[in-house]
Length: 273
Image 1 (tube, rainbow, N blue to C red):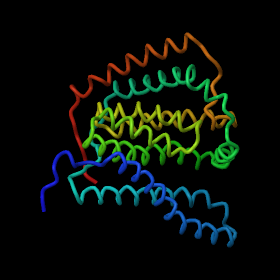
Image 2: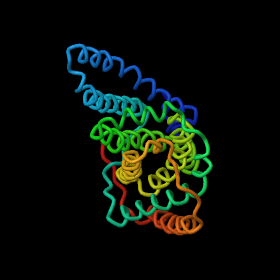
Image 3: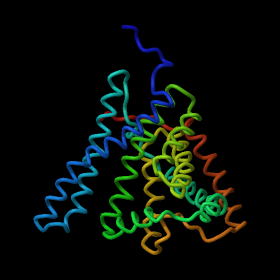
Image 4: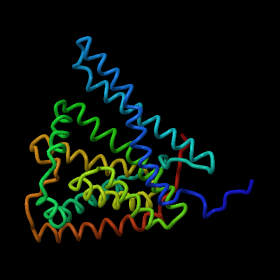
């Protein structure tokens, strides 16, 4: 058998969309036994533990999916998740500044347009259901989502796309997929831009840890906001402020320049799982 050539490493754009679709399908299939167990638990009068059961089950399902994809990739090429590189304090600070800049720019540009679109009732109800138990909501939004979504969409999809295409195209495609999997205009548009920024940080630092931190910080703000308003699901923004927009652009440029030169200064590292 011929050795796989360099240009055939990674995955194609169609393959990336297929991987995302397979992720959703596997989550659905693996959730069926969990639903059956939940029904049994409810019938024996222990329905109050169902939320915790689903949370534990969600973690287990995501772990299975991650290992499934890694095993498949390793059948054709060497692959490691980039988890070993430990960001320094400056990188964490600039990551937060990047997040602040994005929020200021988004809320004074695209966010204003998105706000004019009525939030789907199912989205509001979904957030209400999640927020019934704040502990479960925090674990789901601020721990499970940042960790496993970053592994799938940056650590696997973006990483594999960048092996076959340019990093720029990989960031765009992975960001688009990340937006589409949210399946609604309000979260989807926001997720697309977030995917671009996190993708950029990933390419420039080779650190999934920093990506998870950025994702956590963003979701934590959403979690706090959702505790205070039912409209948080729609990313409601207060209105246009030219000062906030200018301030956001300035911080964005500073943060962009910082990370743009990190790939020349950092020490690369990977760990095997």
